[in-house]
Length: 141
Length: 481
Image 1: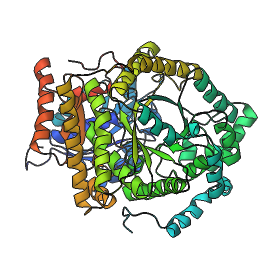
Image 2: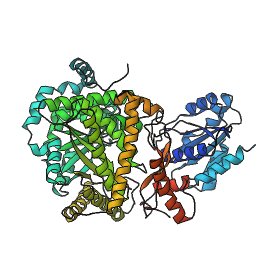
Image 3: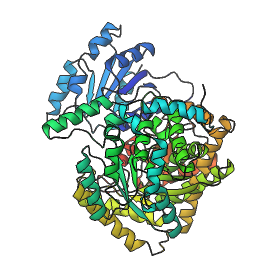
Image 4: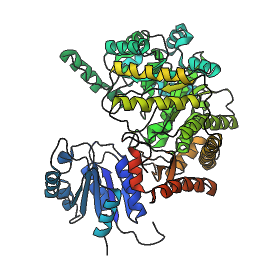
């Protein structure tokens, strides 16, 4: 981060469910910190409730959920509602990773999670720089 | 109470021992004096520490393979195939994850279900479930030393059971079980548990049976060596205080020949220095190298090539043991035939290379070794300073502020500020050194190496490069320019 500038935003990150595939989200956290965001990293095996309470405590602007177990369709639904209940209406939700098992079309996968209240959904081969650029754009001004 | 690096008193050890052996009913089968007598009836050829000390003396390099299946008969058959068809010198038996997490009841239920259905469900050998008599049948089926394998924050009952049953070595260590194998457990807790493990080994040693911990500092994936060396030294000092006299230190080969071989020489050198500095003068160190620690190619022949290259680096690095992974590593839990074939390939590489004095680029090797030692000392000196001479008190404080750190840690108490990347020749460098207490010489060295790759590719080395590097070899090359 460059000196004493105010952070561009506070982000809560973690792997949802029993997932421990930590490398991807760790690299993204480094990149986001470097870009000037405050990152509250929850690491592996994070439950929906843990995401929500960390976001409340840190007054986060967004939650970044990583999922590589292929079970995101079972783990993600309900998170948006829990955020609403906790008073986090409108908090931005980002999701990325190896979301589903099998050969579903990406458009279908993306639509499914957007319907569940996720603002941006990323495929496994997304560039780190792309995610950082998107977040910067989303939080500009 | 703060955990300090002090030998456990007999009272404290005895108190914990009672607790440990009552964690599951088979714990009652462990009788220390009887176990010592049993171990003394085994030939020296079956004692891990003795075979490693001999290898160090004669310059031999031994091969090791890990397996772990839940059926005693199948595990026995597996070890026999590795011994006979794989010419394996040392065996690792992996403990299943239910046992590792103290879910003994669940492990028992899974085994009962196996007896009903004929299908097996556990991902390793449930040593605590089987207990002493049954496990001795397993260890008695082969003529070479055995090690219990796995890492967990609380490994105490598994170790008790293993050492009483004919195993004479164990993997795992206090720092790695904290950083990579738990999420919330504090370092004090894992270190306290490992003090017990080392104390148990120390007591066997005093009774005339050397027992050996194999210490790994972390997971060797895109991780600068000094980060792993420093964590290894921490555990070595804890083990020495508890009376351990033989230790094997692990180096993870990561693909750059000079760096890998240098790590195999730098680690025992720097560890020896600290042992000596703190007054532990009678510890025998050996080195075990893993053959390729990154993501494996799916193609078994490509995987085998990567393994064999790691074996060559291990010969150059003059280690005592090379842990030979298997050619099916990327795709599945390996079968015994593929495992044995991989071992044979590794062995033929050892036999082809061992009598040649392979010399790599002298200057590069010297620089690499010197830098690894300097970096490790910068970290460990700071840890000792923070603990006012006590490595454990220091390690706890140093972890809090990121002076002891890991790259892809699972534990939320690890700072995780450090990240590695490959240089132009594939050696792993610090892209970000986080809060490690490095001076300018070290930082400039890493910066310069990374900038060589940047000049070569005509672009910056950044986080997307780190992602590329994680897939090195599995996608065909070590360095994508």
